Length: 476
Image (tube, rainbow, N blue to C red; front, side):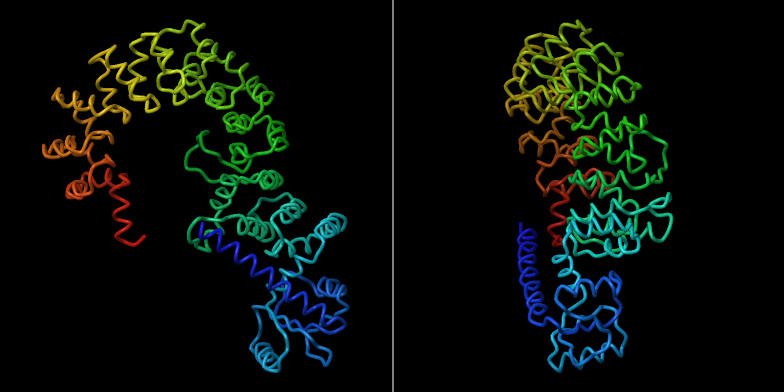
């Protein structure tokens, strides 16, 4: 919240400052503007063309008609001395970066875009793309015009510069950023995978299809720009159509699980899909009803995936039941995280393998867990002991059984009452201590005692209660 407020104040301040610069230009029409230092993002002709709207003249040496001075961050010692003397003499001055912001504000985006389209002036385009003052929307439109000359995004100096300009603009980490990370291809992949801007993703598909180095030849991890875009849920319809047109199985693999894929596109992928792609389709939460019905007739392993990861509604449950699947296969539904609203219907089927899976499912509420125990007794105790929704009454009843396997599960259960956790701690049992080390509900005092056992440090490092205390002590 503070960061957003800071950005908001910064924009207000910049707006006020730009207005002051504009007033200086308006009040000094017909005068000269002295540019000191190296100017990278403009030619003399481009600056003069901009100054013409104020009837002003570009100069590199002081004259009697001079009204303004613009200083680059790259000046020679002699230029720095000149700037200092002129500033002491009262000449109005500001930084080149501020002039670039003013330029970006005053230039007409459509005129600039049309000019670059018609001229195909790649040198000017490269300079414009390095100007960070232009809005993101205009930058992306201009970026489409860049000619990669049939080479990769990092294969020559110009392409590398453009790729870095793209990353610099859109890589926005939550915390401090090491400037060197901008030059890493990994950062480019991070920009693409985390972007929520469909226009940015469209533009990525206009870039050469850069392939990321991978130590493993595995399909599950995106290996190039197209596959990264295909896996991003904010992709546009046009980009999805373009990706589908490649008829590339690896791209289809990532598109298949993309929730933005419409019914028609899902069907197009399914028609040419291998088993891996069908597996990805089966766990797409926006899978069409038609395809859900169709995939219930697929091989057992795909049906398993559909039951475990697909969205299971009341209507879909009826369709599943109509298939008369074996209990062992059907019971996989009990692991699904989307079944919260149909637990009652599932329990009414009185299928023990199903109840066993339901009893360990964290979306199943406590009253249903009580019902499962009443119906199936000791056969579901172990799986119930892992469920954080289990009632204190059941936990106490299970603890009274004095069963070592149950106790290990209760030691890791965040809902286990403090008194029971302390009793388990007091046993000083290696396996139980390992389970306790993973339990974020265990009081810090006991977690600190467990850290004396070096074999538990890896488990403790994943315990949020333990790690947050360390970070707080370090002031992080």
